[in-house]
Length: 418
Image (cartoon, rainbow, N blue to C red; front, side, top):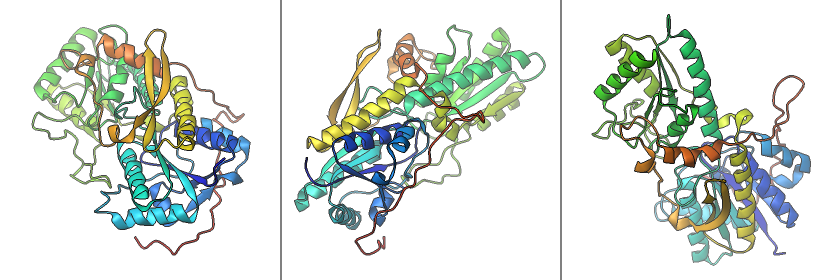
């Protein structure tokens, strides 16, 4: 087997199953006698030469990662710009890789991470350094191009559908004398996949959620309020699921948290449910409750999808295989081969076709009135939340998760001043 080490890093918001991918990466590399280093807190750890020696962890601990949520090595939201604009940072990254004889770099993240992995591979080629870069898919937003679905989404979708179904039973029980409208806010900036998944909570036209607001359709307040009033008149109560990224026809986010931006340059969102609740109460006079699950959507390992869990491990294992085969600048993606029965496989896709591309809900997945999903969307979504991922429970009634030792590797370079 070739000499050298493999560096694995996690990027962006974590998921209920990203550690399942990490577990598969480490286990597969160990089987091939390849040492795995992990960057502490994502790409920042790589730049700071803050690397973790995963060989210090037992096989049992690595196996337990597969059912532990969060990011075992730490993640970060840190966007590297173009090779020209951030030349010094890319060169520093290459210095760190060279110092630790890293020949394979696996970056587990979304669109921006795929772009970074692609740029690192280009710089290594420019300097003649033998490095194979592989992007590993992860996001609860399901907005990565090429792949049929993305590890992390299925579990967040399952959590959303389960939560909405359970909350709807509560609302129905209390509607006569209390809450008439319940609003659930789902993550999703430009793509409404997670909000759409809430549609799986109901099977009949009057089942909750009766209204789903998606960023793929412009928000029309008059039409929304009229629909709420219509549903309450017919059903007696109404459950609304709104994507955080819904916007008006002029492109303004309905929930724009003061105009602040995160490290990726994205406007900080959050609070659309609160806003909508205020408008419903003011205009229609109904008692309204709302919820913002936020991190709960992506950390709910206790209700993770078995499909999602298996796919998260499959992309991790394939990423190592692709890397050791020298398949540079690719990402293992999920290809659906059948809806019924649901079947899928893993293939390699060029990072150039994934990086900075965004997959939105197809028009055929959105109901004509814009307030729900179609049968076609249901056929796509339903297999992704199927099954319960194995999880050990302790005598205290809580899940048994693992915390790694995360032993640091000795530094070989001067401290990074960036």
